[in-house]
Image (tube, rainbow, N blue to C red; front, top):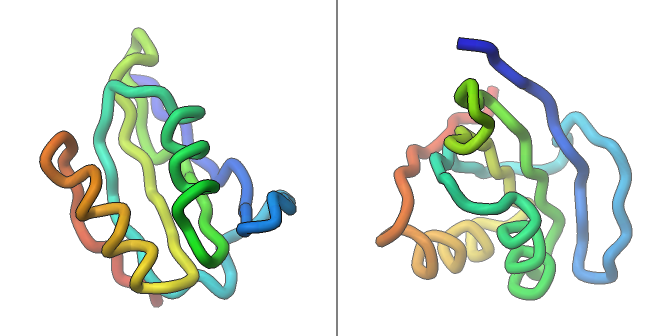
Length: 97
């Protein structure tokens, strides 16, 4: 199975974005979904107080099922995301080294 990897971008509440390696983002989740990355990004832009990244960890051959790494600047943004989406997705805490 082909694998796509890499961080898409860092965003903050003001909508500023830049390519990033995720520095300064202290907590995250591994997130499996068949949904749209754009829809997730829009939800995060609207509901996150701090910066976040969405990174592609893995994707199936049809590019439908995706495993994403979502990193958050603030733990409360992660908790808000999980409260909204944990009933529909699989996730696992990611440890930061």
